[in-house]
Image 1 (spheres, helix red, strand yellow):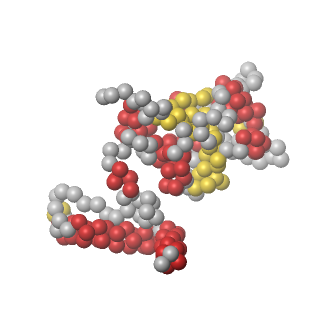
Image 2 (spheres, rainbow, N blue to C red):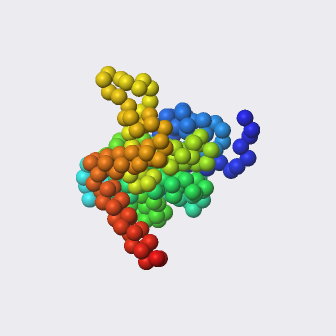
Image 3 (cartoon, rainbow, N blue to C red):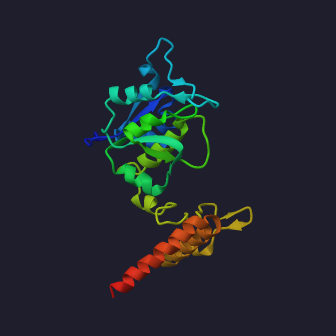
Length: 249
């Protein structure tokens, strides 16, 4: 294989458990792209910036309450000493209170030169370090995890697969769920008949236009049935486009 002469998309991860990476990201498309130099991974051990002999990175919260909070001074030292502040794309903090990750955000991040991801633990990080560095706060959904590392892997995978050269077929990206505001249509392959269930005849017809119409209808139907929020946005976008087209005629 020819060497990759492009500057790789750099992903930096700040974590208390850097050994968790690349983990699943070392396999399949993301792993191949990592080996091919399409993207690069750097991990930073937050605990290395602790200031006491016990390597403490957290403390009890002011005001009381359960759990522990990651110290602002330790997080800040990790960011600054690693040369991450303001470099290599946006700084991202993974938190349930952040903007929910979607395909639009993944595309936006894939257009950057890289990204730095801060993985929290315990009850989170001291608010003051967030005020200081103003990271983009991102959530992978309305669920609480033990730490930011699994969420970071989801985010990295969503972004890396959009980088040029990672996916072999550009059309596959364009027809995936969320790319056109809809969930994806159903897929079928061999065998033609399975357990009394047959592949829809239109897919066997060889008529590409009819197949396209069927797939569009299926995508609309499944979105309308399962994701009313997406369906409402899709309809609103269509109405907005129609108004725009009418104004230009």
